[in-house]
Image 1 (tube, rainbow, N blue to C red):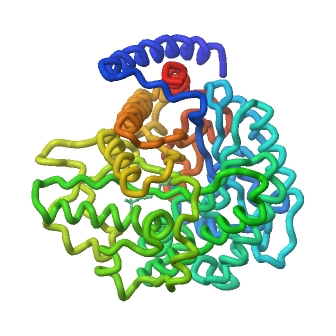
Image 2 (image 1 turned 180 degrees about the vertical axis):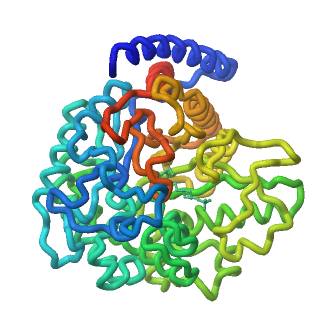
Image 3 (image 1 turned 60 degrees about the vertical axis):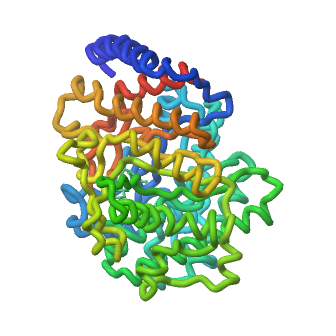
Length: 488
Ligand code: GBH
């Protein structure tokens, strides 16, 4: 940060404190709420979005390298290089996060860095293991808790070539092998594991919509993938609880989706909203946390597409988690007259207007609206429906046109501050209504590769200049620091 930036930044800090005070006073009419020493807060990242160095360190190609290679699947033909070059700059990122007052860092491990060709008989890459040892040790050295995602979408391309990766149940064996390496190498220090990040985003965006790797558009395939994801998750859970029980960590899966609000007071609108919750959350949450099978609404509507569980499989997958990881960003209003589309569940009618009134603030992404009221309802719904402790593993905002502003301007990211303020207060409300919520991770620790949106859409609480790779804290990082100081 240069001197001018530093001066501007100091001024912003004072403003942040003032804004925090006003947000505190706005909630002080309710019972004061302290989160307690055990509450985990930090920021999150994912390997492919930040690491860069995709050809170095002995890493094998992932499905995203292949998907982005033609330059047509991302804005400006962006790829995983440079990412934020966190492969080399991880210590700087961890130090920044520490300076924000966080007590945890959520990151993912790249399967193709550990097993470059992916398979259970393929060679292990010691350089990859050494890299994650450095990273984990640095997090611990800074007094923070490493929160590790085993899989954030970057399957080894070799498995895609060999058997279509998630389309084949063979992946369950290969995934178990990969997970065993992680528990063996890192489990002495890592006590918080997430098997899969957002399986829905993959089954939907990568196998129905086709905008994520490997870019297929086939509903039947999508449900094959969903079943294999659930089986791989369950296998990993059982592995951890049998062979690695002595490590005494916790393990879960991170699910995602929107809150769906019935936008009319009609039975049909209410039914559609519930169907959407079933199709996004229930697809994974019912099998793992509640019944061992898909939601009834989904069985009825999509019986000819679903990959069914045998009774033995249902038993094997039910209650295979210590917690529910949840990523939620936004809400949708659902009307009564859109019954046609829950047949896929993915192309819901996503309205952001109710009775002509906009129900959320606009972001840089068409799918993302600042709607904290829905976050509170969703947290209470997930708690009351599934009764598992909830770890909020991602929540965040990409400010509209942030990319087009000069640095001094854009680090005053008031829309992001406002978003986190609203969602954190919504979280407190949900806790006061009984929900057992144990963590809050802002997405993301730094700006990064926003998948198909490339480097144009920024979610970071830290700015990254993608030419120089210089990091600059945004106002939102200071806001979070102040907010958690007040509430811890
Ligand atoms: C999370 O994905 C990811 O875990 C993280 O990697 C990502 O960077 C972050 O959030 C921010 O996006 O068909 O146009 O309605 C969120 C994934 C992205 C899934 C938007 C649903 C809907 C796109 N969501 N997507 S659209």
